[in-house]
Length: 474
Image (cartoon, rainbow, N blue to C red; front, side, top):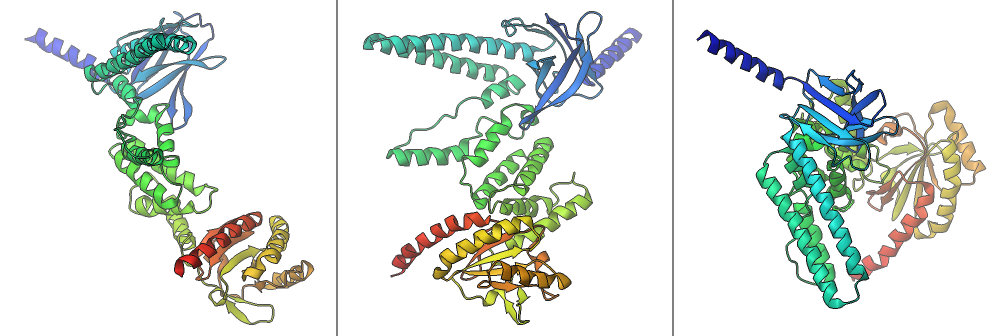
């Protein structure tokens, strides 16, 4: 009885040890540098996980008390940063790798205690062999003039593709839930159904189908996918290419992704932060609406618990200030003071289009923008365009606003300054000048934060639309 108990305790100890931390021993024939690096993919970048020194037996061993997150890791060699890849996941944290430097590295790599890695490398070798066969057949097809022989070669090439697909499907079936199977499945092409119609109709159907099925082969809640070289590319393509680049369409795409990712805290957190930062920094007009959407739907609803309270308050406050200024919103009204002391509100300006221009006489960019804006106004004012120009100066500095207006001969615009109570700088979130907003006759924001040099192109497009709209109304 005592022997059985001792044996049980020993087995328990081994099991516990096997589950704690990681230990990856690597031997590389022909590698003479004293250091070796372990790195990982995250998003569209790679990061160093650890650096180890050569041991007396010429091996390198990466160890840690905490398990590595699952994914594809890179073993990076000095001094040229050449690397090979290994797979790590929850059940694959302690193993040995033996490889060699040179053209035969793939075939010369073997693993101990890691069936997943060995199976994956066997798959890569198989894939390489089939690729060589395929390339050879393609060359023969290109050089063949006999149509019958060419057809036979093409049939052989198609059969080779079918064999590879069968191999991949069998691998996935035989190793379900394994990281190699997940990677292979993620890189399978989408299996389109048959579509009918004109070429244009078929392309539209394919596009719509792909929007719904693009991630059929990738489990977006599988945390291991976060540390792969392909997930970020797929997500970026889904949002940037498969959806119309309009804030509403992008918001729908992101919401779909976030819901698919929600079961994985790591993936959800990474991409929620990524999308927030990406659209906060976007230089494209109107994309701040995506930022506001992200804040309102996720950050203000408690879906970002990792965010420090002070930072969260800043994010929510920033979205609150931006929301009234989004394209399509009615521009916040301003009651400002004219040179003669009279008051005028933005809403009182009666014009088919109003250019709202915030500037300062001591702003270098304004000094470049104002002459361009003057040229634009001289060219387009016959269309009834008004420029509501607010000098972003207060109190004692205001007189110099009027001096600048006279010197630059821009007195035809509607020039206004703050009278002490308009709070226009806060209302329009003026952190820098110049700032330009374009408003329609109802003072809805058509465009904003443009350069003065962009106005002519914008108004050429706007004015081109007017005859069509009038015709439709008759």
